Image 1 (cartoon, rainbow, N blue to C red):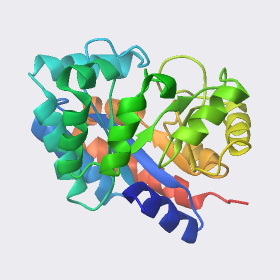
Image 2: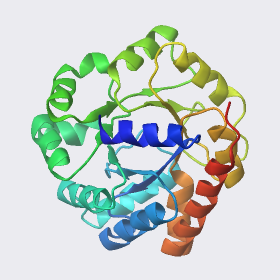
Image 3: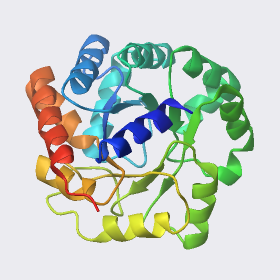
Amino acid sequence: MSRLDELFARCRAEGRAALIGYLPAGFPSYDLAVEAMLAMVEEGVDAVEVGMPYTDPLMEGPVIQAAHERALANGTRQADVLRTVEAVAATGAPAVVMGYWNPVHRYGFRRWAQALKDAGGAGAITPDLIPEEAPEWLEACRDLDLDPVFLVAPSSTDERIAVVGRTNRGFVYAAAVMGVTGARAELGDGARILVERVRAQTDLPVGVGIGVSTGAQATEIAGFADAVVVGSALVSALQERGVDGVRRLSAELAEGVRAAVRP
């Protein structure tokens, strides 16, 4: 059983969804990024997505793109991402890298998978990679007991969702709305419909991300999804209010997730 499997089993036993928070490594500095991620865990975030800074994060909105640029300008490299993973994993919370494929490919995906495992990482989310183009990556993940996580979106066909459901380990990442990442005032019904479609194809937990920014929204999503994923709102909190802002928002989100009424 992987660390993500253990997390979702524990959350099921507690009758609640998991809360997953995202921040890029190296933003606004290496030390502050690590401090903020540890604060997230202390305030009730169950797992951390450690963002791998990249020059062309095509799925990200302006908030996270700017954070990537700042991290790269700071000189953040793969070694810093892996050290960040190690710091988060030391808390006992699963650390999952959210990263685009080109840097992993350049590093050498087998070498990178081993480095991620050595750092205590639980797996990796690769938003610009599809399972059909990743047989060797999937083999490396199986060999090292890492969880590969691919995404689905409202535009995904049932066939695409089925492929992702058969291939993923840990959970399925469901992008709740079309478009790039970013906090939204209204989430609409698309997330619930997408979760229902995913559950028709797989028994894996379903995590919903893109748009969640408040405790009330976290409560709404946690009422029907297995995980609530929050990124841009935490990045903004760190940018505008520092680690204390991340701490306060994490506590609000954790309270919201735990307040949800689940079927």
